[in-house]
Image 1 (tube, helix red, strand yellow):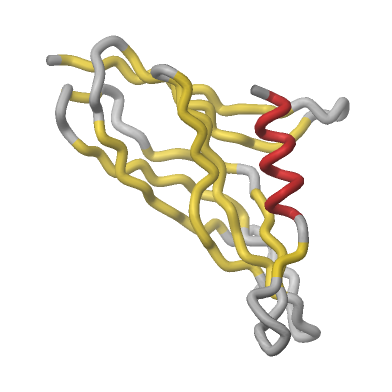
Image 2 (image 1 turned 90 degrees about the vertical axis):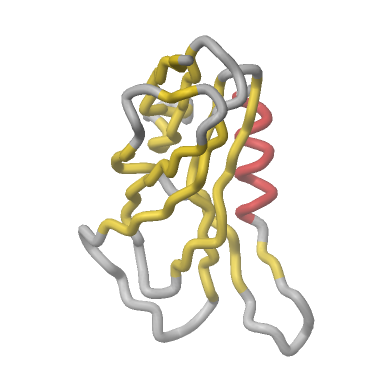
Length: 135
């Protein structure tokens, strides 16, 4: 699992360009600061889950979520565009929110692992939240 996340991170971090005249950008996975998630789910329902993350600069813009699904475990992290521009300004302590809808399709509990960066050894750090499913 760690290898999959690292591979995805490396692929997404590579420089991208749509065509020669397009604005150049990189994709960057950012660590999650906090999460707004229900304390329980009802089978068959859909719930919004909102994550907050620090926006590092004015050149960062939300693209979508890294979302890895394995049985009832979900690994989540926001992916941002990082536009290559000379007028980028560093932003400090500005939280940005992004939301995705989660469909509850099975019984038991769901375990969410929200990526919060890496430790000093380069190992991923997760905010892990278990949400039980009621019927």
